[in-house]
Structure formats: C-alpha cells, structure tokens
Length: 136
Image 1 (cartoon, rainbow, N blue to C red):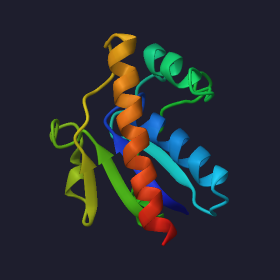
Image 2 (cartoon, helix red, strand yellow):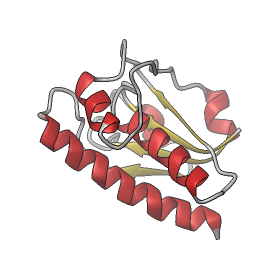
Image 3 (cartoon, rainbow, N blue to C red):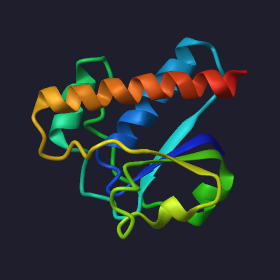
C-alpha cells in the first residue's frame, strides 16, 4: 500500500522524480509516508536527462525501471496524482480515476537539462505541499 501513487504516461520522467523526491522528503521528516509511481504506457528506462537532473540533488534513478499502472496499485493508494495527464488524455486514461489530482507539468523527455531542472524543482515544491497535507 502506498500513501501516494504518481502516474504519468511513460513512468520515465515526472512520476519517477515525484516518487523519489516524496520518499526522500518524507524520510527526512521522519514521516511514515511512502510513494510509488507507474505509467499507462511504460517506457524502456528513465530518461537520461531526468537521471542527470536527479543525480544533482543526490538521487540516483539510473537503475529504476518504468512500471505499468495496475488497478491494484490504484485501489491500494491513499492518493493518486497524475502528472501531465490532462495534456494527453488519450494516452493517460488514469485521469478519469475518481478523486485523482493532476499536476499539469510538461514532459521532460528530450528537453535540455535546464528545463528538466525547472520541472524537477516544481515537482519538489508540489511534493513538499502534498506531504504537508498528508502529515496533518
């Protein structure tokens, strides 16, 4: 069971960053919260530019493998957050899950490192706010 399930199309960028940041920040705060991530059409690997951006903040995603979203994952999650699914509803039907929130952030695939860093930093801000609501 996860407290939060982050979902994006390929589970190769945004949702992987959100999961890693959430788990580290929750651990640093001593909170018993846990996040997972998955995609509706999983990619082969985490995008190289995402691995580089996360390495800069001390998180290594190089060995992470994108996972397929399952109904079981959704049912066991306390909260489901899609990331960018409103932009691509056809590829990310998870947006139609009841009580799902969507963070409309751009896909980092193929973007220069500076843009991926900006996406990472925005995800971190949103994760911090989310942790605040779950910790109350």
